[in-house]
Length: 438
Image (cartoon, rainbow, N blue to C red; front, side):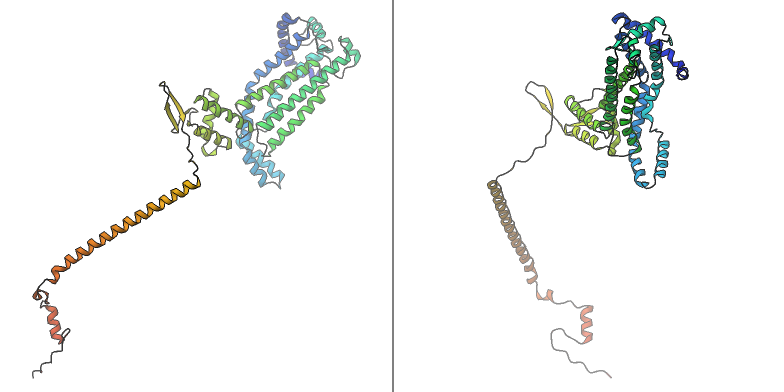
């Protein structure tokens, strides 16, 4: 134990100093020897650590989103090498390396908190062992030993014997009831946080190693907290319960306002965003503009929920722009009220009214009459045109019959001469051949 304590001595002193500073503030409000003063000091330590870890949390979200975008490629690799597990693992690692992602990125916040956790554990263990540690001197040690949370001392454990618990001024029943409740709450909060991530913010239809890892963490971490929690002091249980609640709230905020594309959380978010934008006619927050800008930039690569969002804006007469803003489209009609105020009303598509059988029959009869009259008029026009044509032809034939016969006689020419030479007459008796001259 001393060897482990020496390994974390570089961080034990800063952690004990932070606790003492918060205790000096809360001690003036609740009293220096109360469990509220020491318990809130531990809670404040957790909040301070988690605030410092926010950049790491943002990096974790980006890495998780990158893993989400790789899921189609990972599925292809699984289908291609489903009978060769070794080749499948090699291709997966190659894909991770090319994309710059890490499947263990979801564990980064927990790994970053581990040094603070062990430092706090050794500080509370020193209090239970009546040993000064870090900046906690003898007076602070005595004050911390008197502090109880719902009847359980900060340094007491579930596995402690009755003699040790009585030395801290408490009963064994109180210690075990309080620690058991805190262990259950700690494990339940961890399980709910991971389950919320699995059911709302990822696509569970794609079975990849990343999904298997997340599913494993959903069941492994609660069991780990339950098993190791019986050996944790009450102060450490306060620490882990606080950090689990912080993680759960932080994740709920991220899932609600910046969900993973293609997840159920994105469908719910875009539905709320559609109602908000159509009601106000514009985007108000920067986060809304960022998400709309990303959806517009995808073009044909939008998923089902994003296409539904764009169609909802179109039906409302709005158009999403490339910069994330929303403007009124061509389908928006402007109506003027009686008091002179212009109000925009979306033009609705008018559906034709259903006609009765009698109306349909009368419309068909009317159409038939119209077609009959049109055919009659066209026939009359054709007859008139034919008569005019006949008259014009008769007029054109009269001058030809009135010509004199002299004009109708064929002219002598080369054709007549050729017929005479051949000794043939057209349409009459043949001329006798003249005797040949000798």
